[in-house]
Image 1 (cartoon, rainbow, N blue to C red):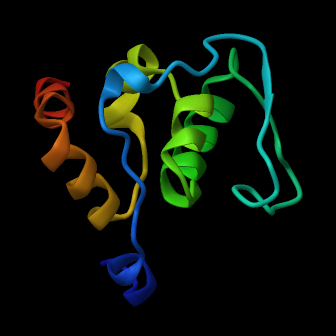
Image 2: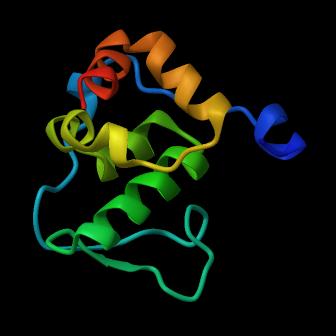
Length: 107
């Protein structure tokens, strides 16, 4: 069941997955306009941190530039099926990038 907010919220999408050139290692600190919670430093080597960071960026990034900065296409393709996302966000991404849906179906 999704919330009314999740149903009505517009989700930002990149023009191409190849535009996602974010980091693959190290630590990431998201800006407050994406992650306003108390914990906002993510170790990409930590599986839980990586997934939560990707979920927050996909849900809250206001511009494609934010997606380009924080998401990495290879990681996104590999971990797509592990992300807990609002149904409208997942549907939007999978509609634009069918390979993500296919990867999720193969997992």
